[in-house]
Image 1 (tube, rainbow, N blue to C red):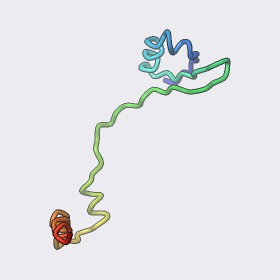
Image 2: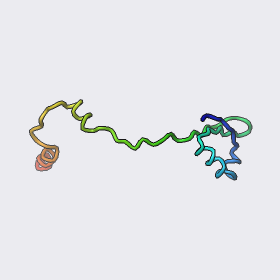
Image 3: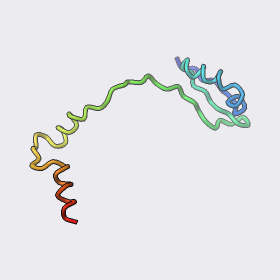
Image 4: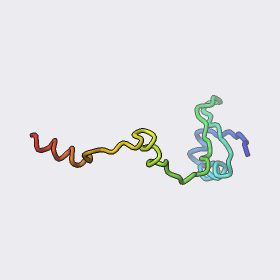
Length: 82
């Protein structure tokens, strides 16, 4: 559903609940001040809730490379230097 409506800055102040319900229904709203469009409010899309596959990303970047020392070991040896 794509239906563009308009609202004024005054409407935002005094009738925000109505504007919010229109956004939740999927409407886009142009905000006007002195008959000029100053902003556009768009409804949020559905939340996917998935996380990136970090293991696949690591494998793509580093391949099957085996590290001789872990990051914690490198940090500990670096701290001993000072």
